[in-house]
Image (cartoon, rainbow, N blue to C red; front, top):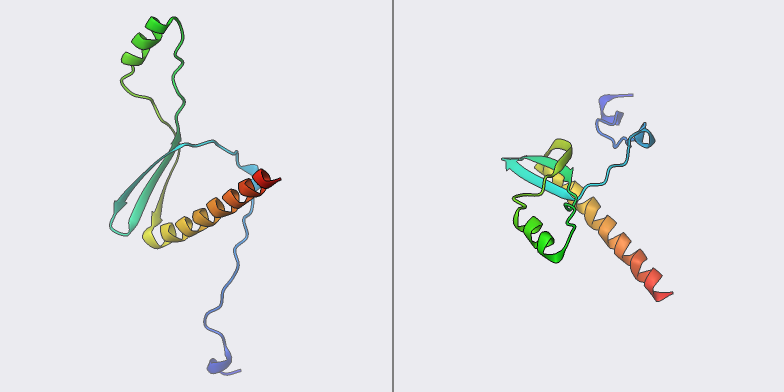
Amino acid sequence: MNDEEIPMEREIPTAWIGLDELPVLYVNNLIATSEGDVIHLSIGTTQPPPIMGTPEERIEQVKNISFIPVKPVARTTVTLESLKQFVEILNEAVENSERIQSQKGQR
């Protein structure tokens, strides 16, 4: 076999190993900052603070809230090209989820 017959490039599939061993964490906050073609993603969770008592007490509690804390769950850095691929994957997931929800509503 000469050099012309040897494939120099080919796609090799990936396989996710140990994915089921990781915990599933709920997140509802995301910060993305960029430095050129590198994007830093910080992902976390917030919960509304408990507001209890009489209407007057509740109003006072809300007035005294200066911020709602975000508990960080993960930080990662990706390239711009990888982020574009992630956005495509997420858009597909949104479309699939909306289609399923729509089909459930038609039953």
